Image (tube, rainbow, N blue to C red):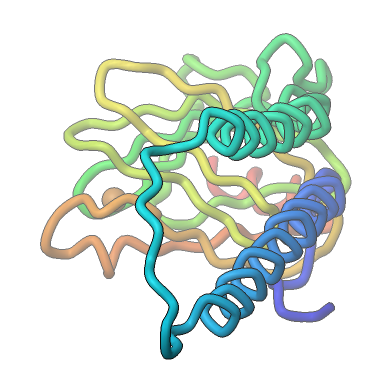
Length: 217
Ligand SMILES: [Cu+2]
């Protein structure tokens, strides 16, 4: 199916698989519920000589319609756990990732690079706004913070979305699998110019990335 944006990160396919599994399960339940509703509308329609019965409730029915969805939801949670922890748990992040710092503010993304020495917090660090340059085929990770309100770092092609919360440091990682430019959006309504809080992730071949960093320093 081609209605998700092209997948361009190492974990995008895992996430898409979960998406389609959830869509299939909830889609089948939706069709089943609506079909039953329509059938009952027809079956119990008003007819000459038929009186509605008064029902006080049914413990059996309530147990069934509580336990059944609970089993599905717990099942989906368990099935998606490994992908979730791969993407979101800092303990499982790749250890060879390039480090950045990303600070969201109304209405821009401040991307801080480690510079030529590859170490953050040193003299040659530099910050660029709304453009995140990364090398292809190389994990990158960053501390995501916000200077003011809640924002959300969202790169649809990478299937990564993470809130930036003032006062908290969120850890994020991804590894781009394709060279090119990918939209970076704020996915949290953060003020009147929220719509304008866009940027891009520019994925370079490794040598081109190194050249770009050298040019900036
Ligand atoms: Cu924002």
